[in-house]
Length: 443
Ligand SMILES: [Zn+2]
Image (cartoon, rainbow, N blue to C red; front, side, top):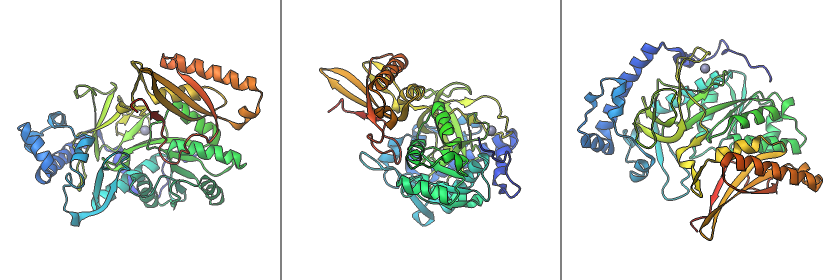
């Protein structure tokens, strides 16, 4: 691994300081901000006001951080039902930015920012990047999509505020991404992990060895990815791979990020209050217990989110990180509660398939799960891209690989699946978030 400065350089902005706030001070700040944000939402958002009224609650009932459990959850459908501006707590004259989800079905969800909200967003991204060892002088290529999606612009302004030089390539055009990475001496890459895998592949085909470049850090997010994928990325590219977490409903990327210890993602608790709840009952769970992550924005003006159900399954890690930050950490998110597929009555998560595939030599981790129903019975096919060399090799090698994959998947999933080996790049190009599952069972 190439060396990265362990601590922030002297010219690191003071924004990194809240990471080390003493716990009692941090909890006091959180309570003060929680009370303020609940009052703000109650005063300005009709939807929230009626939810509180149903429970005979008023903002004054929040006297401690634990009282948050009295408040109603907010779910994605609340954003859809109030489309487009129903959850705004600021008048449009104070809103300076709108983002929206791509919305594959029906209306998208819309999120809004005031100038103050954008400043908070930028400051948390600065803290993410500083935690990854980036500083002034770094050259950061942002290959997240720029536009309605929050990834590109979020990372962009954070990197600029850190003092790094930004190369705003946005997604797509792998050859140009690789050319700029090489010619500009890019030191850090921001994109989805699947897109970076695609770049690793393409670089190899172009004869570019990423390990020879100044590139030393990759900040990957916007989709769940596994520890095995991190190992693969680091081995193939020589970068130190960091997991960054966020969602548009809360602010965009920058809700949390790994530090260089890579033992969970620090949540910027001065702005986002995390809870873990039982996904079935909604009951709060203690640190160290897995459940659904629920987030409350503590400083959002334009669109406060109270107890937003993220559907991401994780836990709050007990104890403090060795890096000295007092901010609590969530475990890496491997799955979402709504990712779960039920195939012939068995629960299957795409991340299980991914881990199994990555253990096997000779496969590219690009894969797709195809679900169909034949005579009332679910059929699951896992299509896996394999390296061009495998196809050129003797037929025996492909058969051997097929058998190994079949064995690994049967073992991990506990159901019989069909494995199909396909040529590299024959699955949908992964330029943004990978589409891992095609479910044709209802058609
Ligand atoms: Zn840490």
